[in-house]
Length: 52
Image (tube, rainbow, N blue to C red; front, side, top):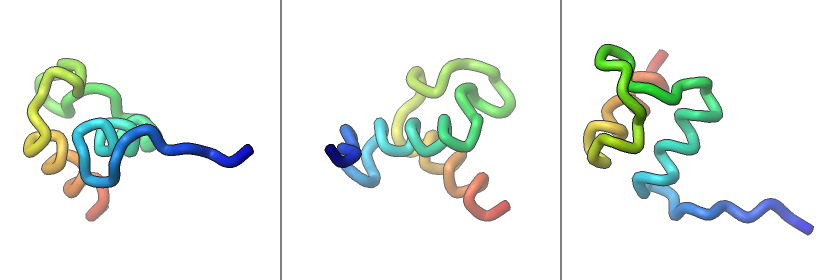
């Protein structure tokens, strides 16, 4: 069987799963769980990590 992605690309769940694959499960400065934030904040974290 193949691997099924549960979240649509670009959704909040997709960004969180990509960040967790990269080893990030909390906000870089506030240290709160990513799931507590809105999508646009999670997207900013993902974009900054992608640029590194």
